[in-house]
Length: 238
Image 1 (cartoon, one colour):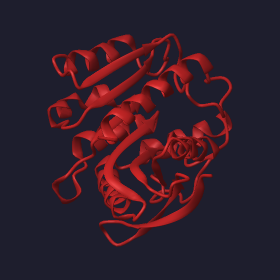
Image 2: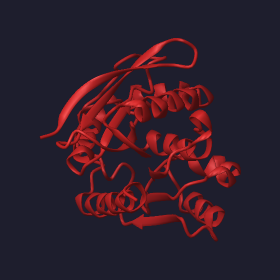
Image 3: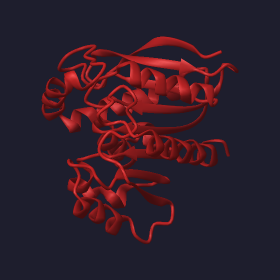
Image 4: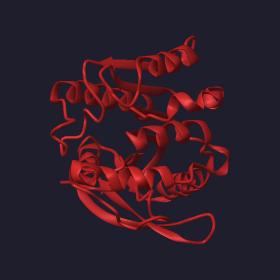
């Protein structure tokens, strides 16, 4: 049975923020940091963390909006305007520090067996990309990262050379927020890197979010999630 708890993480500049934590039935496993959509650490994120824990992982979901509005969460599309406004105000340089503190905290948990990964959706897809390129607590980054439809990734492709772990990208070809040209730019930037894969789906934005019916595409979500779990099984359980 999955157990859940709230972890308190100390930031680099002395503040503290909360992270939802889901633990596998065994009590121990590789760690995965889960990065939120613009809807915050909501039911969808907590459920995904629990699904990761059911699969044997220690999942940690930090409140990435804590410096702007602690505990913000919206269950569905009704919160998209406020969530996008918070996302636009999020300082990504500071977010990298908060992600570094989160990864260090995860590695220090007695439940974490050592290897760690990250996965993010929407805003979290962009954060997951930065997790792979820029987060290096004690000089060591994550072991594997998955980015779902991160709308900011194609604008930061100058950082691709800093990726030092296997990465998987998921994109919907009908995404109104991420053009085909933007996805193509990501693919071109990672070509020649066999450890980095880009998957396409006949779906729109946020197709994995089962709490947002107008976005959710069950077939695409299930296929991408299966690929995500297989990827983590291959990279984090060695």
